[in-house]
Amino acid sequence: IIHRPAFFDGGGEVSQGGDGGVPIDAAIGDGLAIDQFLAFDEVQWASSLGISPSAFTELPAGVWIRDDQEGSGNPVGAGALVRTHYRGFLSDGHRFDSSLDPSPRDPLQFTVGQGQMIAGFDWGVRGMRPGGVRTILIPPFLGYGARPPSGSTIHPNAWLVFEVHLVEQVN
Image (cartoon, rainbow, N blue to C red):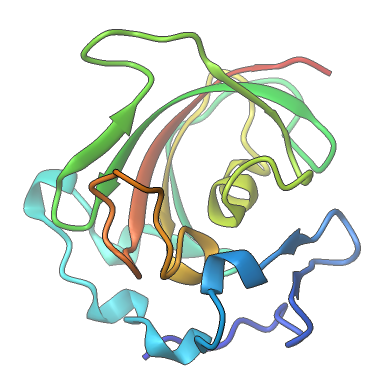
């Protein structure tokens, strides 16, 4: 059972000091409670992912991060326009998406804190610096919750693993 993060006020907003809260209702789904999901220490991580829980830090927003490569320059904050490459995995090691392979695509561009991404991805890139690589572990209530994208291989209430490469902070 996952704990209710301190930032969750029960009113449908994820917030940390007023720096661009992201709506949580859509991720959780109607009638679901946050405490219906597996906790971080209950997830069985595929060995192929190289996840050692002790190497991760939990952010107040409820995502877990590990910086695999430090970048340089200004850290990303709310309102920043960023370009990232990524690989997305399920906890069982299945890759469900990638902008890097097998056929590279243009980097994903979005404005942090504007609700353009799933909340966990949005919170997970904060603090990264250009050139940095970070692994982000996203609990279901900050990912797709009970409603993953139609036609995807993501199952309901899945923990997500993203390897994120911060290509550029545009502003």
